[in-house]
Amino acid sequence: MVDITETLDCKGDVCPYPDVKSKRKVKKMKSGEVLKILIDYPLSAERIPETMKSLGHEVLSVEKEGTASWIILVKIK
Amino acid sequence: MADIITVLILGISIGMVFGFILQRGRFCMNSAFRDIILLKEYKLMKGVLLAIAVSMIGFSIFILGGILAANPKPFTVLGSIIGGFIFGIGMVLASGCASGTTYRVGEGMIGSLVALVGLGLGAYLTKFSILSIVSGSLITPMADPVTGGGLRIAGDATPIVMFIIGIIIIGIFSYTNLLPYLKERKEKNEPILDFTDMKTKIFNTSYPWWVSGIAIGILNCVAWISSAAAGRNYPMGITAGWLGWLSFLLTWNITAFNWLVFMVVGVILGAFIAAIISKEFKIRIPKEPKTLLIQLLGGFLMGFGAVTAAGCNIGNFLSGIPMGSVGSLVVGIFIIIGCWAMTYIMFMRD
Image (cartoon, rainbow over all chains, first blue to last red; front, side):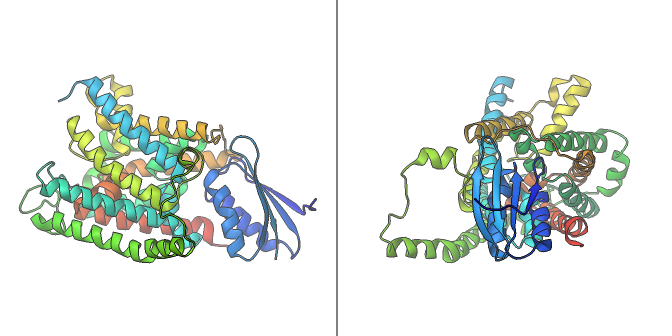
């Protein structure tokens, strides 16, 4: 079980808000911390993990929960 | 003119396929242009370019073969520049271009529904009511000296030029993307095309950019034939379709119904079906009420821009540019400039 440092709720947001919010959030977090992103917008749910990887962070998991709902766990580098 | 049932079937079926591909490909031009500067992400843009290239080749064959007559949009200098720029600003505020906003309604996004209402109102007021004074003062068409229609980049030689440009674009993509892919497949000893599990690929996974690009390009060519058969000589569009609905609701005059009016409804239906099958349909409402107001305003600006520029992103990028319309090219450039300006203001200043 991973310890979640912070949770970012992007439910209801359309792009690019989830992308921009999560990018700004990880900037403020410290190395080793884990961010949990709740999201229900398909394009961003597919793209945020890619963006996080390109920023050098580790994507721990991407899980689809029920209908149009994803949980992304990111570990800050 | 074909009877109304034929027009309905032709329009709605093309729209449904379009909406399905848009939803599966997450194909939105606002995201495509915006993410070039915001996320340094080019996949959707490559898909847009590929769709344009396929349309260029298809349209040129239709025109050169005498199957359909070119019908490029007019170039109105100020109308094209200002309309395009305002449309670009509007789509960032609305979080979606005209087609992106339409298909997301089918996914259950309430913000997009609000933006769509704004789009219809903005377009209606600009076309038929108070705002027509503003847009009318900007529209003085420059006609093609030869045909008297919309100005084209190379006059009568335009279809040949477009055909060549289309081939070049596809050639470049083949070199940069297809060739490395084929090499990789060969090294791994895998078949070039994997047709296993097609059901999952079509209905449950999202499409890679090249699949949506090629599919939309081909559909756009079929759409032109379908639309022409219904008495409307133009490929796909979006804004004029919603304008038609608003005209009908306000006047109850059924002359507002044409191929496009049914096509846009098909887009919502197609996206709805795609979202239901892939378990992505959900009613989603933005948390902050402010967001809804911004999306309404964005839609309104898109409506104004689209009428002033003689078309939205689909009518200009997907249909006008492949026909070689100078107007569409200028509108396209200014849509991108407007999009980038607003993206910078909203998301890139920290």
